[in-house]
Image (cartoon, rainbow, N blue to C red; front, top):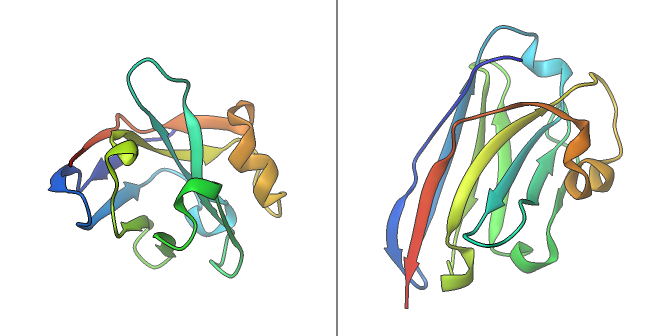
Amino acid sequence: QVPLAESGGGSVQAGGSLRLSCKTSGYTFRNYYMAWFRQAPGKEREGVAVTSTGGGTTCYHDSVKGRFTISRNNANNTVYLQMDNLKPEDAAMYYCAKPRQAGDLRCSGLLENERFIDSWGQGTQVTVSS
């Protein structure tokens, strides 16, 4: 496992925006897809967004398409999640995640199955009030 440090969570009203960041270290960041997952109270953790090694391929959970944008900066080992038009149902703990395998992966496969993940951040809380 490697350290993943999320930041940027907080409380917003519905319709608002937040930008999450995840700073990593200890491995060759640019060689790995990166992902964001979330877990709401009483629900299973679910994949939210995935980016390929260079950022050219992304995929999203259907519920966030058109509202969330995942991006990365390989120069500073950071992955971001821009969240716009937030809804109360987006409230959750958000986790940055690194897959076990380097190189090309199936984006949707990583999004849908956390068994490919070998490192998790500590999470950052997002609260959305209606």
